[in-house]
Image (tube, rainbow, N blue to C red; front, side, top):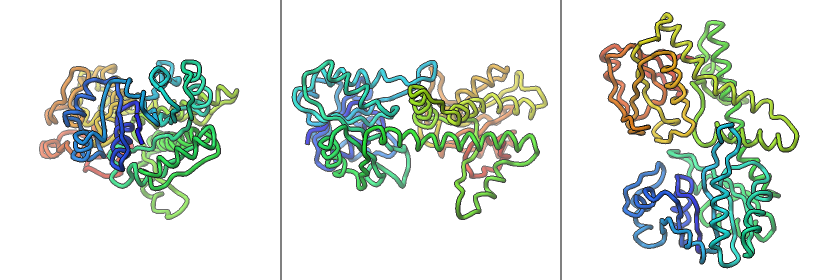
Length: 404
């Protein structure tokens, strides 16, 4: 089957490699010319994707990376896998989905199954994608939702063994989507309507957002009372039932946890309701960077102004270069706002806003471990006795005091 995937970030690319590996002819379309060039020449790297397999699929023609949307003309299935960020007001931004739909409407030339993998609020497929396509094209479309569940860098769960939730607007679209996904996913779970599939993805990450916020609030309370939240959570984790550990940190990052709950909150607003827990969790997690810097200032006896501070790890996740919604960036901004001289070390990210990662510097007033990438060797800080605070949510103790 000929499948076109719009969006070749780590979600779309993982999907493209998985589908092409089982015999589908896959066209990967993305507006990013640099990314497409790197995919064609084998110069890109995405965590969790076997580079050799990717290169073989490109060379064999099973997978065609391209910027040309004209390739949609002969396709049987189009999968939308584009970003769904928040706008400046932290409301859903569906501009990428809109753009993808307009390209599909412009180029589709026969009956086409359109599957949305992009995370969005319940009703997006039925009330946004379908009307947009049908008002801009006379082609017959089938519609389904199959929210992505890719976890970059996860060594245990991948595209094949992670269960997928799907639903179509009609029985035919559900059946065809199920048949396709079963060729590269071992477990496909059908639900009654797309709104359920869309909501399930949002609830998965809202669950995590709220529990992280609870852990962060617990950290604030523990500091006020005078005990270690981290140690208390480790102790609670010894209970073999009815408990799942979440650890406090400077906030949450990535494309899912800080974003998806706001899509659910937005859907609640549209329905005339209020998502109180979600809104409180969002504000709690967003406030942690400022709270942390205030604690650092107290740690330094109110002398943060002018101090040299180095942040270790600025991406949102260990060993992943993704900076989307990274709380480390909020932390750096707040440190600078309060007068600190800030540098950062992150060999995984390499460069951000024209500034390159610096080596760990032992001659600083304070080192902050935020995201402990494997590529960061903390030996020099240990050897030189650098003043260091561990701000990471990682349960591993690196030999310095956990701040929470």
